Amino acid sequence: MTRVQSTFSVGHRLGRFIWSVVRLLLFRPFPRMCFGWRRLLLRLFGAHVHPTARVYGTARIWAPWNLVMGPYSRLSDEVDCYNVATVTLGEEAIVSQYAYLCTAGHDIHRPDFPLVSAPIVLGRKSWVCAKAIIAMGVTVGEGAVVAMGAVATKSVEPWAVVGGNPAVAIGRRSPKALKARN
Amino acid sequence: MTRVQSTFSVGHRLGRFIWSVVRLLLFRPFPRMCFGWRRLLLRLFGAHVHPTARVYGTARIWAPWNLVMGPYSRLSDEVDCYNVATVTLGEEAIVSQYAYLCTAGHDIHRPDFPLVSAPIVLGRKSWVCAKAIIAMGVTVGEGAVVAMGAVATKSVEPWAVVGGNPAVAIGRRSPKALKARN
Amino acid sequence: MTRVQSTFSVGHRLGRFIWSVVRLLLFRPFPRMCFGWRRLLLRLFGAHVHPTARVYGTARIWAPWNLVMGPYSRLSDEVDCYNVATVTLGEEAIVSQYAYLCTAGHDIHRPDFPLVSAPIVLGRKSWVCAKAIIAMGVTVGEGAVVAMGAVATKSVEPWAVVGGNPAVAIGRRSPKALKARN
Image 1 (cartoon, chains in turn red, blue, green):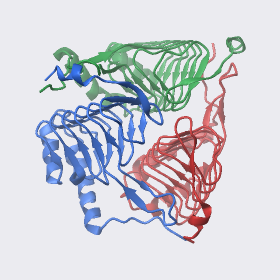
Image 2 (spheres, helix red, strand yellow):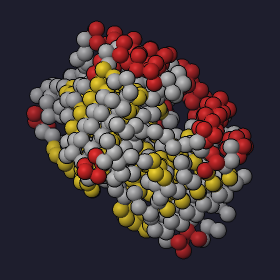
Image 3 (cartoon, one colour):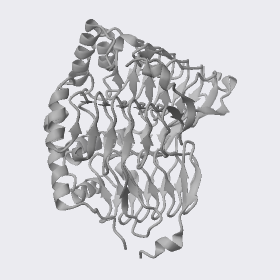
Image 4 (cartoon, each protein chain N blue to C red):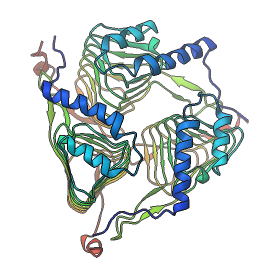
């Protein structure tokens, strides 16, 4: 009989344990607006977080050392960033409340059901809306939008708007119109 | 470079801060059946809640002053009522556990990505099932049902049953049969 | 006017109240790896849990006496097992984080809107992925997979892979290839 066993090293597990305690006692309970404090904690655990990036206190980061956040990017309340592989947010990329970024799963076609993972990349000015789910290996292109509650199982083209479960194209944004703001 | 900035007044933010503290210390921890106590707290913050309406302790109300609840209406456990605009529940309207009522978003076609919002109206005898999501501006008609996990991006006709993501018609209820209960 | 009323007995309600207190104080706060302790608590409340089954601390069991877990089966973090009717996990059945097993609802076609329920059965080696939802009365066949975020409203055939909302067939697993691991 085959048991589901973890493939993580002792060092990795220890790091995650310490982080889980820090998250509970020092990250989550602090006032909402203490973005600098939370950036500091994330950096102490290896995250690359731009000084203008914002992470809210109720967001869950599985492994800070697998998190990269560009300028003005944001992880909102109750986001679950399950970053077994790296999660990268480009400049101004926004992840709204309750979204789920899932970089890992199991290979259902192999008898030992191994844990598998692949990075998630959220492009510049992209928006993952509330309650959306992003699957492992997905790249959300520059300016693209994954609508509320959508489940993105495939990469999303730049400036596309996708919605539904599974997510399909439901519209487009105009890069030209949006560039006007810079 | 454009930053995501809030458009809310200082007064509004202060109100929400005080409410968040009250919610944490006085609303949420009280025993499950203290419906009268929670109605009282909501009313102190401007909600219009009928004496027979029920809100469970783990429900999250973003702004009580934007909440209107008719007779025997209900917000169940873990419902998130993100009422930047008004959320109105008609008589006997029921919102089940983990449902998400989302009255706000961003205009993805404007360069300044402004916060936009629109009210949600849940008609008399309507039912928003567990884990369903209701988008901004949606009216769920009298007696209509939004099935478990469905994402309603458009208004739902009276006595219709919608399901899926995006939600589409999957059935109907008979008003005549149901009127028998009165 | 018709009120939504509970159909549960006083004994049942008392049992659930005591369990909710035990869950809060003794089940949830203990360290992640205390699987034996949580099995003990569940059994004290009537669950049939195999000595190799694992339930994580943040999983929510509505009624332990309606839970049956086979060898090496698993209820992961933040799973909500709303088992008004029995939930059965076969050998090596896995339920991943945030999944929702919902055995109850309301009959929307009857004037008194009665609570109705039906068991959920998760077959041997089946996998309910993260954020998936299983509706009342559904049987997930042996080796079947309900993909991330999928909403299974109907039973799933053995070795089928279903995804989307509503969930439809998106693939198959090969029992022969998988049997190699035993």
